[in-house]
Image (cartoon, rainbow, N blue to C red; front, side, top):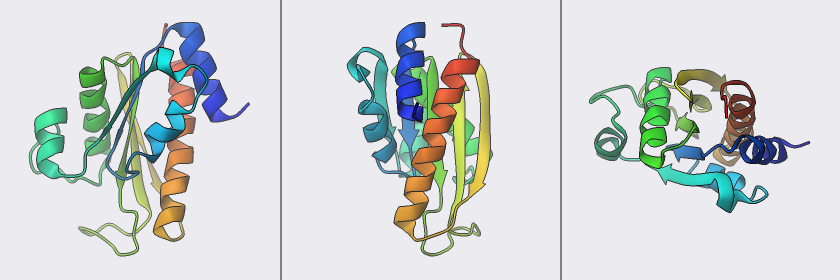
Length: 155
């Protein structure tokens, strides 16, 4: 069973609302989640936020925070979960490349999550061109969504 199928099954069986917020993946994650079976019943939606002021104003990210950090990823996930009223929400942030940004190497990615009050994040270092980094990020984020829906929610 793919992560997309697993996420759809968990969301439907547990009655979960799923959300995503993307700074790095530019809507690719939402597109992948939205392709899940009966997504109209469980996918609350996604937010794409690139500009710092949008992240701060809309999603409650701390002013001046390092936008490529675990803390930012967690704050994005919590903020989007609140806006979307999601039980489970995952965020993506990082540096897709090809160049380093703000002292972070290309391929440095943080995926944050919120799952019924549980908050956390994971750091990844992906190789390849920007399109490959984005694809690897979507795969990792889908895995996190499926895992969080299965293990961190009472449903």
